[in-house]
Image (cartoon, rainbow over all chains, first blue to last red):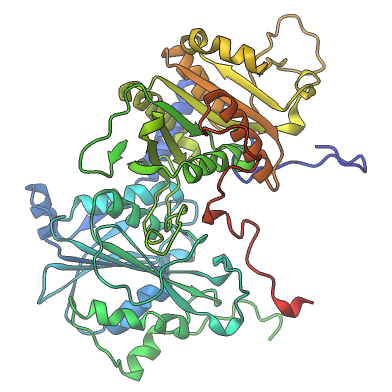
Length: 276
Length: 262
């Protein structure tokens, strides 16, 4: 596009990518594309007994599925629920995409846990990055393993407060705060305000909520809007009101010891010492 | 695939389907928002597919506190039975590697549902027009052979121009290169049109030339043109802004301004 000053600028659309024309693919291109697609597939690795059970056609009995998406949500569950020795690691999901590998892989995981005394509850912590084309697949594969009758889903997620749109300007003191979104089948009472227009939710929490809406599974997402990028204890504590609801299905530690808190909340490492 | 949100699956036989293409300025999608909002259409189902980027939110067409907390998904179907009108709204971008799959999904759904015709609302980059395309109103249409017979008279009466074929290499006068259909910024528009021609689907496309920016006026333009053809609103002589803007259009350009800025 030419401007008044005679310069030519590239024009980008927020809606579509530049090159939508389909190039004729030859066999080699198709082969490469197929291999890439296979590499990007989501794989679920369950413990031997669960794999056996699934193979013989029995789905995992589940009355409550609690999913934590993001570091703060995951750490919240680690501190208030998973800190007791009462949990079995049931399985994990492995995912490859443009952001996996390198220093990110140590911290980024997707693990499923089940309490020893209540096999109908499943907790999953997702701290790895799932690309846009993998979200639907992850959701379908996981829900395929669960028995859907009388299933309730709770999702804890987080987002930056800069993504939150409101007519009144948010001063920094109001963040972090919680908002909820639930499927039509959900009949309980959320512990916080419902997400106001025109805000939307994206990512894994959206994929899970869509799936539950379409398949009429009662589910709710609690999203925390925070002004801090990365793990932070204040953000983590914002999820506390959900304890009243979660406590109905799992044994929680309402006041975790300082040791546990210290272990979980690590301060951010200073990567560069250029400006101490 | 289509999943009904009601207890019994809806019947679309002989309905007209209006749907957007995710294209420059999101004009088609904004126009569809106006249609659903103004005609107070009710949702009858979801297009549950892995081809769209997942997103979700509360009711974008909420009119009161009672209907505000209703969850909505990236692609949903609404109907206004008295007008024999169905609308598919698409709210999220199509995952690039899945655009062909999405087109096939749409074409087969249109065929199997028995729609009498489908109208795609789309847009194209205004800066890429050639000399011909800069003439007249910025609206163009395309219609598949199977819809041409039924709509020829109406289109002639409206004096709309068909989307021109442009040369593949502008500036080069190579007699061997045929002019071709080119819809820059149109997303799956061209692919959907050519697939529909091949599969004998009665499909029409309305394309508006526009640029990215505040595309609300473009949405009004496009929906008014559509109304000239389909007569969705029963009183066309009323004031121009007869379309109802949905609540989801608030804050299109960001949150309120911090007072400390001034």
